[in-house]
Length: 139
Image 1 (cartoon, rainbow, N blue to C red):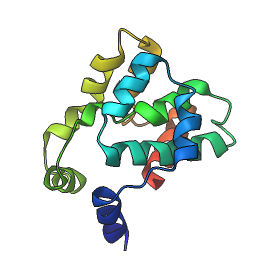
Image 2: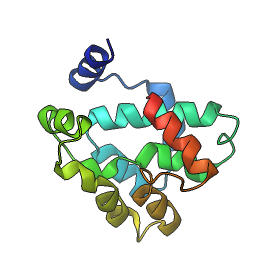
Image 3: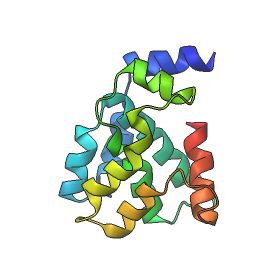
Image 4: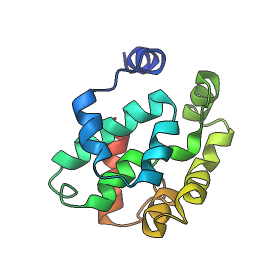
């Protein structure tokens, strides 16, 4: 069922306008540009993570983690579904480097956020990141 849901989300992503508007208020102009250039599927996924972060007892007051939710996958680019599936089943693809590409996009704008993006898949990075990873995995 999970695979079917993800396939539908990939091919027919629906972005809730109210959530999108709320999230955009957090980002500066450069961050908004980066977000809007992300693949529609990644924007939808990022908004789902954002929604979980804003409702989470540990992270709801952490603006940096709300921004991380929105931009953590900005390094993926417009990756096709075949590459995404291969990546999910642990076959080496260019997606393994998406945290580094995301870091490069944001390092001049917000270095602290860029470092979190670079490390958003690193285990035991800290209590907040562990919670963020849990929410990302649920989305």
